[in-house]
Image 1: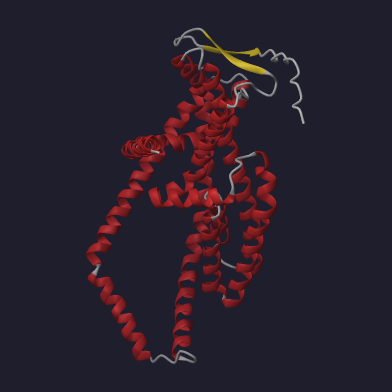
Image 2: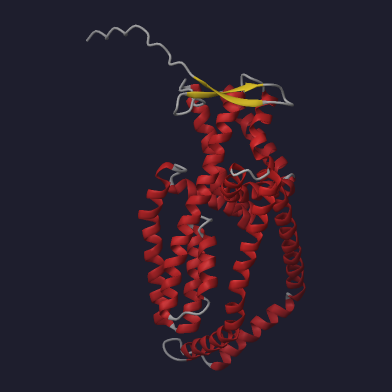
Length: 379
């Protein structure tokens, strides 16, 4: 028991040190991770162009510029309705506050206007007393926005290099580890890349379905800011479970302020129905051969990621957990003698050349000859 306890303490210490190092290197790791996620989206059109004779650099820069143009077009499409409806939404908020004040002064609360005024004065005094802290928060928020923009630009630059030189990565990494480990490095790299790409595709499809049906319901009910809310719902799908609730809460709040209590209840019902269909029908079908993560694991991963790194942590929690699960399953299969490096076609990667001119070739794996039949145990 003492030996097991010492080994456990060593493992925990190693995890703590690894977390400390990753935390110190997070400024460098975050653009890399974001670049990889963007690359999973942009690699299919880049591969298409490269197969049709485009040079790697030209194909990569064309796809990245097209991605930026599409993203800018989406922003340009969303901004005008938001600006046009901000004044209307502000009037709705004022009317909603007046209705709230009327409810509080009437039964069953029967609060006097003097009491409400005192509560408002206390809130104003509290805000004035914390003006310095609020200013500090504003400066911190502006710095965070600036850092986010820098990380985004760096991620786009890395995305260009990933798209241009990505196919060279696995042969180079396999060459650094040597021929014995090369098949495992190549197979594990392919599995992790496939899992990451599968996650992005799945969440994009789920987000599109949620955004379409919730946006359609908001448009039929005449709720303002339909397009921004639909886009928010789409991006909220990339934070499983929690993102859907946050996006749905925004939709209900806007409906309550602009259209009243009845419309807000209808919007709440639409959000719940769409999310139930997504969670019980769409997700199992789409993820049948995907991440293979239990819902409880997803919830815990998102909670841990959000507590450690905020919104970015919640966004990255599920793909990181899925990649850890892939590595664990690969190691388990290897220890069980299942040869996870062998593909479904019965081939295995083999390293040829050196670190300067490494190439990966596939070789057929001869099936293991069956041994003599085991004698049945006596009964």
